Image 1 (cartoon, helix red, strand yellow):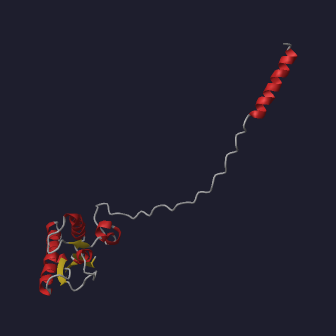
Image 2: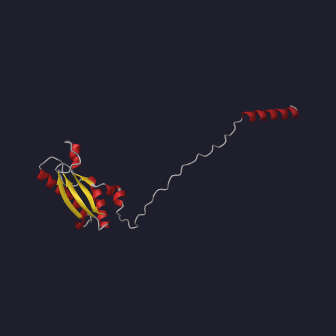
Length: 171
């Protein structure tokens, strides 16, 4: 093959390859990214003590109902951690005061339910004191069946009424 033909063949082949080659797409313009606000970091005491604001922020301290089994005043294991949180809060905040309101469901006599509500409130008070809360910070009251949160006559409703409510009277 002559050098001219060879050069022509190379040029034609190069042109054919260039025509078949895919072009790289231009990079897509970057989409605007919405700025997310920086997370709010609340200053925490360096000593790990609870503050009054924690009553509204801390998920454990926001739980203020302790529920009981039928005709029982002993604390169920799943509520021990809630009691521990409130006991720590009371230890950390000597000026804090709580009232423990004992409640019962509608079954039983009025007198029996008042006594049961009192035993439940006293049970929670004893657990708080056992974990370091000062007895002067805790008061108890029993409402028996007088202040139900649910008025239907079924097990779910009765269970919701068998409770002690933790009410903070001083933070």
